[in-house]
Length: 280
Ligand code: SF4
Ligand code: URA
Image (cartoon, rainbow, N blue to C red; front, top):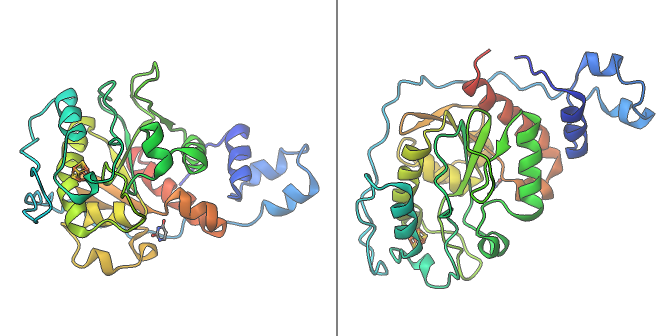
């Protein structure tokens, strides 16, 4: 796989601690400090990757969960336009995660339209809830830098751009922050997935990047038995399908901030996702 990284992109990767072995870079980087040069040869070329046959049928929709706490189950949202979908999400009380939320994390300002990439993260944290934006703070910056390094720009609902080739629509696997720090329950993931399905249908991404184990669980539980029991690292390196869209699993940037030694693996995952969008 070839990646045409310019100096800015390589600098970004270096800053992230992802050292890509790049012969031309070594030859054409007289400005690099000796330490930087020494750190370059750490090869992180993506390992051979198993690509699942892409013909797997899109998984059936999860039924609306009828569990007790659901005050108002998610209605059929399969035909809604963006603004009606956003209104439904803002008023949703279909699972217990609604109980302590201050606001849902869902872009209501503007319909994203089609975007090449869709990035799905974990349940929103405090920062994301306050800003109403998935992947906020330092983790968001790391994600943005990693995306930039493969030539992808995050689409912002209140920005001026329209998503197009090379842009990413970002979202969370559930739209409400758990009021107390706890894992989302499988039923909560499945309930909120109704909205995610419609997001995918409206955004029409060419690839979905599932970051973190709950994002992976949400997207894969319909097609992979016992997804919740499989360590995240074992879900990497395979192209799955969700509603017919290729899905690549990787680490969440919050995890990468704590575990920088896995950034190289995350970089390999991004390269895999990029190869799906732009085949060599
Ligand atoms: Fe509704 Fe999703 Fe919030 Fe649960 S997490 S209340 S399903 S919007
Ligand atoms: N485990 C997680 O829960 N998330 C990650 O991103 C990586 C490991």
